[in-house]
Image 1 (cartoon, rainbow over the protein chains, first blue to last red):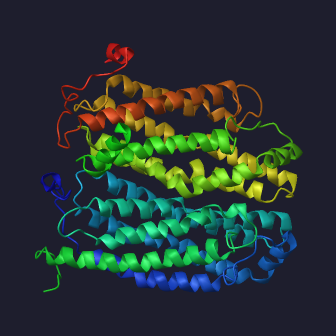
Image 2 (image 1 turned 45 degrees about the vertical axis):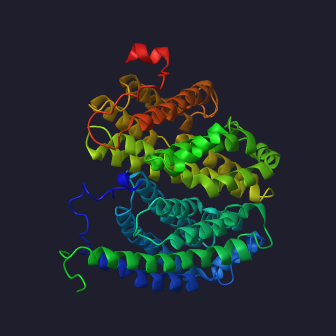
Image 3 (image 1 turned 90 degrees about the vertical axis):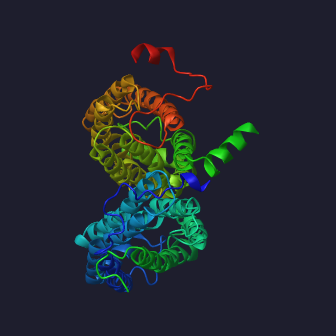
Length: 253
Length: 263
């Protein structure tokens, strides 16, 4: 069985050269601080805005909280895509997996790019809503709906990312896999938790509405947990890569 | 039984299991996509571009639950579209041409996911969510949904041409040449759809005989053909470099007679 399991690194002259990767990795705490700050700064997240609010109430929300909406969403617009370089570190680790083709890596690259772009699109709708607070309340409500639907339901790439990673790890059957097996099971669990958010349009109240326990709190906690756990797993995998490659500049002794 | 055990073997122990995973996922994704658009949401064939605002309100009311549930399915499973793109990108990488072709195809199609299917899901969900919204805005969402879906043209135009060029330049015989030319047909559908940004009635409107019926027929045929051919590529692939071997002996070749003539 293991005869065909040749890591896909052999044709890459840069394999193992991970200098610079730690620079990318350590941007993560900074990104996390900015995300948490922006999350708390946006007055529509704590508590989440209700889909049952009338056009007038939504318009009032934007007039009253104009600066906080703008600044928090500018922060998210800047830095939601800052996760992409971190995800590319995971993609680089996948080179060491016992796969015979790069096709799982291509799957992950694709959805890793699209997931933050979906988030970015929702910040655009929030910022348009806040751009002219004197606009007709119906139009503000429309922008607000588009923002919340994009933000809440826009999980297809995250779900796929988790499941592609889970399968890639399951297929990595070598003695010392790049990521431990439990990381695959963890990714499946996160994907399952994200599923109800996709159907948030079906409910305007209760746990499945976009301000509900499942579609808002559970979904966002799952994403935060995923980032923390994958960062820990990534750090271990990066450390092992460095240990195995003494030529790496600045490698730990 | 044999289909199930075949599937299990393909996905668990076959040396090409990653490729088989993407291939089965491609079939599953396009099947789901067809069911969601044609059956659950009934957004294909598309609504009429000339509806007045009140009629679009009725259109949304008529499909309320279907839109929310069907596009919910896409919101959850839409990322699966990456499997088809990854497999096609791999097929291009297996050719003798530069990897630039493969990466171009990958990036073009993956970025297209946002305008190509996410926007219609968002617009139609927003429309179905508030049936009492101002009718003018309901029509705006209706237009956004259909025009973003039909009118995301460039990626499929340039992407198909990239795949075509790669196939025609390839020395590894990954795909037959006639399929290279079929890519041109798919690229042309994206030219033909362009007037749907201008016309609200007639054969060139987004629901028209040319812009919709002919385009869907060509796209459907193209998709069916490439799914079949990708399977053929996986079977023949030796996971090495250089020309792709012919199908292993003992397996009957079942190419369409037309394909033999055109090869």
